[in-house]
Image 1 (tube, rainbow, N blue to C red):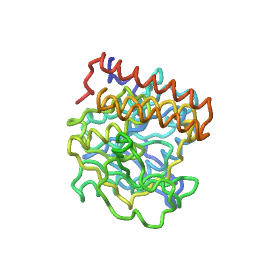
Image 2: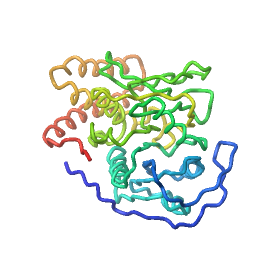
Image 3: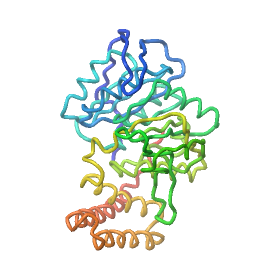
Image 4: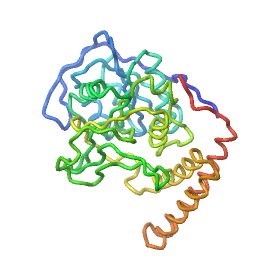
Length: 342
């Protein structure tokens, strides 16, 4: 399997100063413009038909009080107006990578990470573009990284449609479920129960600030996942390497969860989660140790059917995805490819 880090199309948009723009979802305005960047954060986001959300994301980002960032927007062959919308923002910090086909979330993120590191960014922010946030997000994340002297930090993330409800307050890896990743506080009303900073084992790549040295130690995202579970894999490898991830309660992000992937429990989502869980188990535990985890996961799928959750069509979809995961693992072994490093 080949990994190409060539930037297929990089558009350095003009150097005109930005006018005053309102930060979507927050009561503030800001001004923007070009300046010499001394210690930039490489902000990496992947778009795929993101036209319905990209403007709110761009307005949030361009309002940041910490203005030393470079945006690497990697587009996976969108067929809507995503790229035209982004091109309307005249800011020299914006760099567009336009892929001629959908390379998947993991591969596209790797393209952006690689570009950020080549540009000398000491920090990389992996961030979804179906989110909105206040003007101090980058500053708060960077301050948290320095205050806790850790390798990665993640903010509190709440649902956009109901900002009282938590989507993620960091997360963990459940050893009883084959180290499956989970979100702390998911679906809970935010009553301050997660208002303390804490070391966690996992956080979604929806918004994750990472020191550049982390990639040198554990490599980039594993492209065999295509999409979903790649952040669990990354967190697990970081944990094995002794790296530290801290959840920060003060930075707050509004997430339009599943708005670009067909909704929660969509066929697309369930296929890749099932496929990638099988691949994750075999990759990290091997065929012998997985004799416990993989059959248990198959039993879980059968239990879902018997209990009436999802119905027969969803069961067959997940069964196909289960065996697809086995094939992905076999192909990954045949490839004998190390995770791409810097």
